[in-house]
Amino acid sequence: LFIALLPFVFVTPIEAGPPAIPSNGAYWAVSLGTYGNNPSTNTLANFEANVSGRKLDGFHFFKSWGDALPTQDIRDSEAQGRLPLVNWKPSVSWAQIANGSQDAVIDARADAFKAWGKPVILGIHHEPENDISSHGSPAEYRAAWQRVVNRFRAKGVTNVSFMWIMMDWTFNPKSGRNPNEWYPGDDYIDWLGADSYNFYVRDGQWREFKDVAGYFYTWATQGKAGSHTKPLAVPEWGS
Image (cartoon, rainbow, N blue to C red; front, side, top):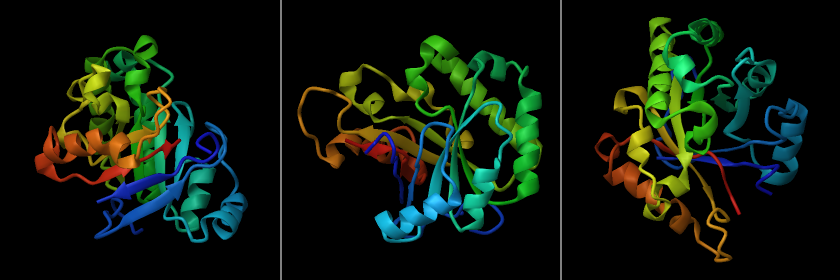
């Protein structure tokens, strides 16, 4: 199920401007298909009619650095009333983004999102701690994130919010990781997210959702970002 269907749940600003934060409850959304190969809006409508039993609040897109965002599938889904969450994964190193050599790519996407004008949640390289060998260090990741956000701000983009997406395992003390090393800073983050999978530890033990996502929740509400009450998301979850 987790291969073909990656639901994301927003826990905790669809008009022009940034995406709205739900006053209660959550946004309910999915991702269908494979990485970079999203289904047609007809497929989504069929899924809503025959599987979810309700209109989805959003759709989770996985896009590459060179994609001309917002791509037509993003536009089509939004036109049917679904808030886009777009994971934008660089094909270049974080250092290349941070040093300004990718500004033309970033600026083009900022201009396009601004011209489109629809609310979007944008994640920059989700689960970065899984790609150190190919993309760089935590410090370079933070600098790259800040570079993208600063370029969007310089372009006057107001309809895009930024979601930081990590692996839930990173927040578990047993991982030996420090999520604070990856955090770009409160001024650069609008939403906090962690992908949560029951199978990740692979020890044959079943874990409840609260046990899998609990460390992230504690960090987000009581730790580094706890005093800022940022909205939370589980962009991917499964078993």
